[in-house]
Image 1: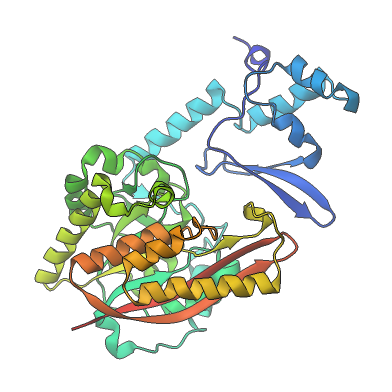
Image 2: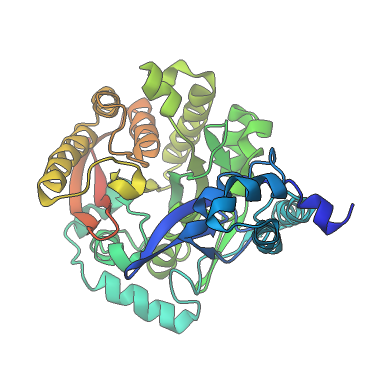
Length: 414
């Protein structure tokens, strides 16, 4: 089958991020691959949006052109758009599926997870990255140095450094320098039917490779079930929630090991009003991680749960109907404080009810991770004091987009 035949009924592939972005007084449609199969985003004129909505595989190029003929759209123009999308692997064609298969196989066979964001979200050159991270850390002053060894939990953002660098710096300035094992756990932003995603890969950074505690991961996987533990391991390839923690770990506690875990959506639990403990999959994971950490503690091996999470995602950019305003952001701040209070109280039930009370209207992507962290600490009978290092709101009124985030330390009390 030739290229023209393949594109005769154009169909956008999945997964695909599509958003409208303003550039001054102009708007463009940005297409981006969340899996990184297509490494670079593609910008298209906003006028093509109605045409793209027809790229579902059910209409031919001629039928699409006929729908918009009154606007001067021709079959040749539709085909030109289809060919451009195909070139960038944004259509569901053999070219894309072959590239995806190769990427999955390459990731599966590698022992190291490459730094996907180096040179994009942070400096790729080691010395430049050291200076970058050091400049962020200089914004914080260690407040609880004498309690560092009792840090059983640590919460940091996963927003980009441009908007979140001061929160990262103020938070990571409190991290213990002594080597330990970090349960590096964070949001999985891509859809999966599974709740938890493990990997036994080491994680590369420009400052060196951070070793994975493979035996620990294997222990959890045995309890969870190896097939579902690693079925969507590929989601680790481009996920930023863990990667953005690594330059700080590499600077502060380079000899530490990590247990990398991505946490999927709890949407079904929230919408049905049932706690995650109602799920066999959730309980198998939580019990497996609890057993592992109990063994570490019995051996005197220091371990900390390190969560890479953000909080609210609000504004028209995220689908809200009303525009952002200072008054609305103050309401968000007050609700965020309630969320943080539930964390400080180590109250998983209150945390769940807070999210379920408005069906997660603020889109707190870190909720499943935080719930899991608190639940595991509760299963270990660990009580803690919580210290909020920083809370921030990154608000862009022009693009009507706001994200909130915080840094916290959880310190064990006897």
